[in-house]
Image (tube, rainbow over all chains, first blue to last red; front, side, top):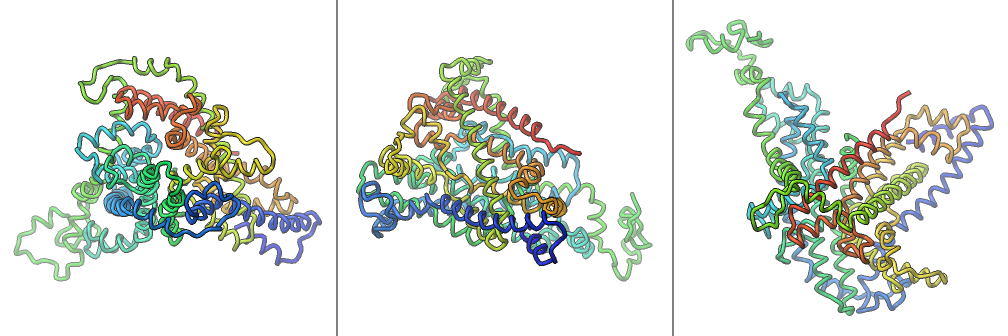
Amino acid sequence: MSSAVQAETARRPAPAGRRAGRARSQMRRYRWISAAAGVLIAVMTYFPIIFVVSNSLRTGNNIFTSGVFSLFNQFDYENYARAWSGVSTPLFNTIIVAVLSIAIGVTAAVLGAYAFSQLRFRGKGLLFMAYVSLLFIPWTLTLIPLFLTIEKLHMLDTWWALILPYAASSQPLLVLIFRGFFDQIPKELLESARLDGCGEWRVLMRVVAPLTRPILLTGAILVTINVWGDYLWPTIVIQDPSRTTISAGVEQYVGSLGLNVGYGGSVFAAYVIAILPMFALVGFTMRYFVSGLTEGALKL
Amino acid sequence: MKRMPGATSEADTLDEYRSLPSDAPRPVRREVPRRVIVMRALRHGHRPVLGVLLLPSMLLIGIFSYYPAVRSLIGGFYAWNGFSAPTYAGLSQFRQYVTSPNFTTEVKNVAILTGGAILITLVSQFTAAEVVTHMPRRSATIARYVLVLPIVLPPLVLIEVWAYLLEPHAGLVDEVLGALKLPQPTWFSDPHLALISILLIGFPWISNLGFLIFLGGLQNLPKEILDAGRIDGVGPIRRVFTIDIPLLIPQFRIVVVLSGIYAVQNFVPILLLTNGGPGTATLVPGLDMYQSAFQSDQYGYGMAIGTLLFLAMLVFTLVAMRALRPRTG
């Protein structure tokens, strides 16, 4: 925004006063400084990723010995074949768990948020507070009893032990975001649909649903990132290595290589396999991802 | 029964509409379908619809969020090993934890980690947001994209990569320090540096929610104030302290609370890299809770620690919210 203002003021005839002129030229200089700083920040941020990619292509045990300054001096694609055989199962598991968590979590949140936004009922404010306050209940408080609940439901070592808690933990944020979205739908649109004889259910399915595609995508992205990045919970409820998700699966794979330094490159190849789908997903849907994150935070 | 605004003259209310004899002349053109009338009558009720809409979501949070939370608050008062029947223990488990030899160390460690994380987060993410705000518009858009993308890095990968980078002597950081003829710390293995090493994970700590929140705040500052500042000759550095920071107090508040809550609980890097060591140098309440429950089968004791953690976080949140409340006027 501020750069737009700057461009505007630059085009106008110079305002009176030398101070303003000095400030503007200073502004221009700071723009260059900030551009340089931006590049520096980006390089520092991406360095670990570059480090991983470079090492994923190294042969055998050259991770430490061949000089870490020389990035991309070897190209051993065998590492990826080895790593793939180790982490492909967790990768597919993650996709299944994510899809089912989205199907359950996003659907439940859309319906709930619609009720909060469009319907009047007693205790609505209180019930909504119950959702929002969940954002402040620390997961460490619920970790142990949640495990005990899953155990009692005989879900240990099944994907349901992951899917249902993920779907549940997505509710507060998603209901918050979705409600904000539904609140913005013009009342007249829904009223006219009701006047035309649509029942509440049909209003939801025929009028509201087509409008919700962007926020559904936002919700799906947020749930996927949560499923993808969670390491702790799968290690607690999933014992069977063939059923775990990617973060825990990668760690298991790395552990299974043990101290065999000859497979050093495969460790990093496994990390790349864990990173890449997320970068691809969010890289192409950045707008939805950002709007989901910021809207949720700003409504707190 | 209220008069329906769109009802026809033959049946002004729903009751009358219903009580019309079946052979009574119906309105020729049904301007208001019956469904609408019924629906309007139900406007304040909507019970069936409401149940269907809210039930799935409420079931989910009821079973998997609220029930565990309540059970945790109660569970701390019972000693339970997961097999035999729980026995009521009163406050003894809380007392046991508070008087345990590691308690002060754990509190000190988590305080350092949380304080450090909040400080790091605020400085790095606010600075980055300032930098991006001052960029020309198009490069600012690119910079935002580039800096937001790594938010999706799985934490596990980031932790493990930093373990490689901070590997004593052989890791990249020590290699650089060695090349510069500087001392090469042993990072995670050094009791005095282990906590700092944990904090170093994720350097430069920019790609996070706080960066987006600050950036959004900076890019939406009122134009009038910025223009006024520019006309008064306020340079970019002074602008940061006299305009940006005072106006972004609400953003600072959110970021302090969110990053604080995250840092207090985040024992995953410690679990993966040091397991509380060397010695007790990186032991934190969260890890103690995890180990008590899942390694020593002391579920009740673990829930007692969890309850204390919750109370500590509640106090922290309330204090932070109050200390950083927006000042009007």
